[in-house]
View 1 (spheres, rainbow, N blue to C red):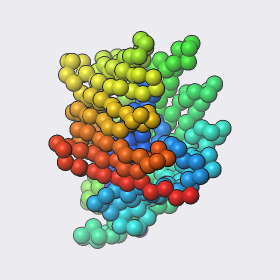
View 2 (tube, rainbow, N blue to C red):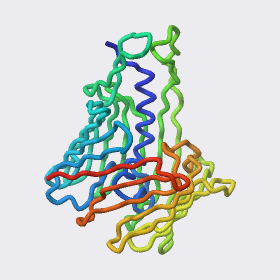
View 3 (cartoon, rainbow, N blue to C red):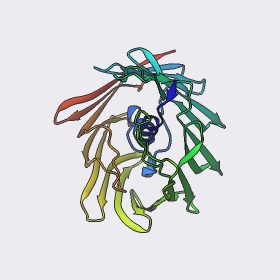
View 4 (cartoon, rainbow, N blue to C red):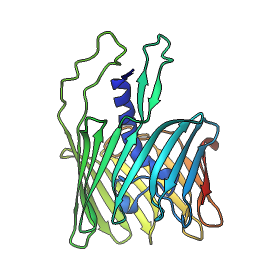
Amino acid sequence: MQTVGSCKRRYIIREIKKISFLLLFFWCPLPVRSQEDIYHETFTHMKGTRKVDVVEVNTKKHMVYTLDTAGNIAEVRYYYNNINCGKGVYIYENGRLVNHKSYRSYTYKRNPDYSGFRWDSTVLTMEENYDYENGRIRTYRIYMDDRHIISKQIDYSYSNDGSLKKEEITEYPTPTQSDELDDNPVDTTLKPEPVHRRRVFEYDKNTTEIQWYNKDKLAATEKVLSLGNNIVSRTILNAHKKKVKQFDYSYTAAGLCSDVKIVDSGLDGFGDDDSPVLKDKETYEYDTENRLVSKKSFLKDKVVTESRYIYSR
């Protein structure tokens, strides 16, 4: 068996882009003050819960999360048609996530119809490291596969009052590659130059303004309106004042997000594609213990995705 390098790298890139969307499964799809969401799934009200099954309705996909005694996710297993096709392992120190490893790689036999493709849950696909200083995230890094090739780094700086001031983002592109099944694969020795970006934060009462820069050129401006601990709305306009995204949030009496109305061009503030599913609304339902039990995504009043959550003690 051989590893499909190009398929594997394309998968890794997709997985990296999905990091910001993983939180959608479990909470409102925005971190506080709109800091880039580098953290993974966060379950709430998990006292006594040790396992969560997330079933994607009308698909063959589901995920099983194992929680530690503190309610943190210790491991996730990914399944397709009830066959394990990957896992993620989480490590914590002093209650903070410090490392996440994802094992989701392809192997194959050279069959003409590609029927030899299989998942290999033993090969490292991606690793994330989190470094803290004075209780705040200072540096975040993503590494690709078992060669530990850095793919992305974010350095954080803060104001004297502890609020986030700047995110310095460095992305390390990999060369475009042909599939290893091709007779003439692309030369992979070329090393593209790193891409430097940043986001700058300014605060005024209940409003946060975030400026997105590609190198030193302003790419977009984001405004986040909050009420207490809840985000009410979020709007991103590109440098030409064209709307890139808009989110409007509603909450239950318990302060849980009940629905989000969405206008989404499919791009982020840097102009990159970041929307895996087209949708204009999301709804959330909870049980009597305020645990999320259902999430639905809609497009023109039709359900496009639905996930259900089953909790075990």
